[in-house]
Length: 280
Image (cartoon, rainbow, N blue to C red; front, side, top):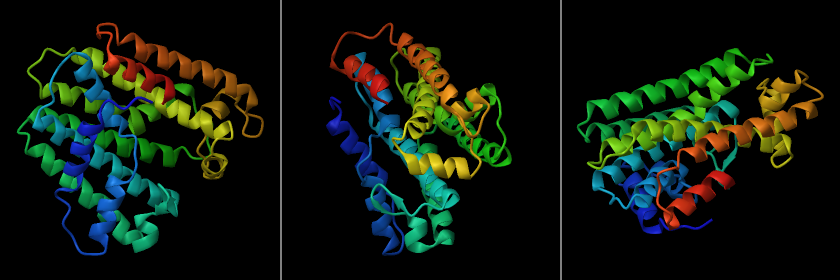
């Protein structure tokens, strides 16, 4: 994938670690974790939108995106604890290396740093928006836990995908635009972010069943987390009939996301955005 955002993403990564200050060796481990190779999709989307429209990026917007990325990484630390994962991005997880208690506290510590960054932006609307999104992410995990070993409905699956994944994409886009004097269409950004985020989750779940990640698929299944292929097939053992319907569902949300690019100029940033939709 083309990367016309190398300098911008480097600025965000440096801002992500600038306020990390705790005891060693945890301090170094957190910084390494935050700067480890990552696609930074939650930052790429608003950056590409802005640049496709010819808009500059302000320091406040960089600061906001660094906070969004920290929130995402904090959620990964908590996910690793919930899933009892040993590795993340090729390295031992923080909970595996330092223990569950310190893993929980580290995730909370990062959330506190992110919220401080956001409060410094002096926007009550942005603070409320991000607080709501974190709340929905937690609700998604809570509902998933109570729904274990139940074959739910596609409607509930989409709602869970919104909560766990899509709202943070949408929030990154909308709050980024709220910091800009240029006239963004917030409804357009919201629709794009939610549709992209839902598609992102569906594709991740589908890839597990297509043997791209057998371990993840087996872990989810054994934990009673039933995603679209099983929901469509209504069968925990023979889910192949649900694969094609899941592909159709994915394509539906990808098309919805791409339709929201109607007003973007034809340039390298718009092309990168379209490529991101296709590949992610």
